[in-house]
Amino acid sequence: MNWKLIFQLSLFGLAMSFATVYFIPSSGEAFFWLPIFLISAYLVAKKCVESFFLNGFMVSIVNSLWISAVHVILFDAYIAHHANEAHLYQNPTMPIPPKAAMFILGVVMFGIGSGIVLGLFSFVASKIVKNKSIV
Image (cartoon, rainbow, N blue to C red):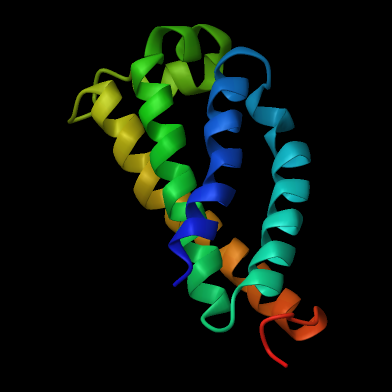
């Protein structure tokens, strides 16, 4: 595992966490995430020697930790700009507090889901990109 690269690439997630709170609506996030995933997959393929899928997967897990933490800390601002999510998290039948639900869903559901996608992107990129570390 290349933890330095994982941390560095996860900074995209930190930047996106603030951008999604204030500027980017949920409907527009995919347009930003696709290039981030392509760049990340390329760099994982270029900088890692093995475990391409796992390195890509872990980038998304760390991304989800950043994003979930920032969204919880800035919960009121996030909810103010995301009406659909506000409705979901403020449902009176939800068995856990909204901030806890946001964190759990962010890390578990979105972290693992996007981790599988980025892991696959990284694996495919490793088959296309020549790795400088292997000579």
